[in-house]
Length: 223
Image (cartoon, rainbow, N blue to C red):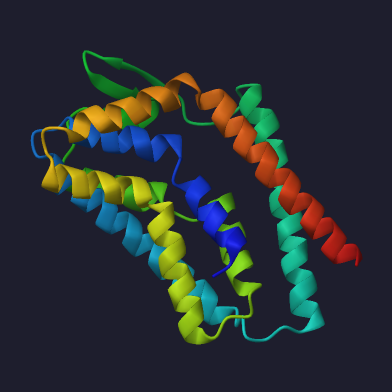
């Protein structure tokens, strides 16, 4: 298993918007069904795209051109992460998670409106949309392909990576099934910490990952 993919999977689990969505779903009358729909839809989209990428871009072949191309992708992703971090600090983009209003979290835009009275279809749609490949996801797939995996090993790594990436909704689903009374308190504590430190956490993660990918890609391309 690629150590880089493991780290990126864990970092992806801390995304603010999915955490806010799961928290909103836990406040609904039937949280297990809603969180389940969100998790299943998110895993379906993320797994299908990841497995397709590993199948199309054969990781078992390590020609000089393919290796250079992967380093070039790392370089582009690193630069993109650094640019996004700069724009996030200046408030140019990034979903804003607001403080709860009467115990209910609010997100900007249409997504926030949908989550005020969530339905199973809306939860599934949110799971699919918020788990489309992003910067960290693409970097994770590049790291997996960089291990020169066999077809079976590639599938295994994609499964592990996606389990880590959706660890938060998976954990919430398990908790709401086994401990329905205490789940909201646990998620509330995690969410409160995330909201208070959102800007520092997001900016810090983007800077660290961006610098790592940019330096790795640059030296790889030049070397």
